[in-house]
Amino acid sequence: MKLATSGMVIVALVLIAACTPPAAPPPTAEAPAPPAQSAVERGKYLVTVQDCNGCHTPFTEKGEPDMTRMLSGHPQAVSVTGPPRPPLSGGWLVAISNTNTAWSGPWGVSFTTNLTPDRETGIGAWSEEAFVNAIRQGKKGGSGRDLLPPMPWRMYANLTDEDLKAVFAYLQTIPAIENRVPNPIPPPGAPPTE
Image (tube, helix red, strand yellow):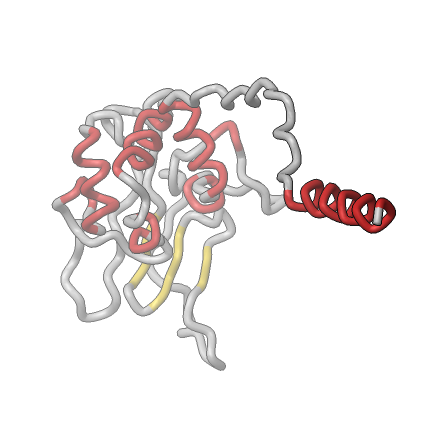
């Protein structure tokens, strides 16, 4: 009987041990939170990952953005008088200038904007609200003419207000470059745009 009782005690101890949750690990220090980004740092990150330089910075002859003219838009010295001739065919819809700053398609010819803080030719005189509205509404300055292809404003309109304000804050810190971008050229038969 002693053997049976001992066996039952051992089984009971095994069951108790199996059903007891493991001891909690000793407390450890929490990983430190990453340092908070300033609005300008966040804006720089967004401008970089959204490849704003891919369109708004004129390309060199090697096909790379010329960072000495960072985000200055279509060079005022590069004249474009209309869409390429002859009209595109064979399923082609868009032509792009060698600076990658003028685009021609069914909408006419569009030129990438000077995003530098130059007050006369860039966005230096814009308010933060005008910038946010431009992206949200797809209108130059928030209430002007339509933003034209290839500007993906419909996608960028999904950014938060904080992100759009951060982009604007960053753009206000880059070097101002005086560069007057021409107005778009409408397609044949359409009224001029400003």
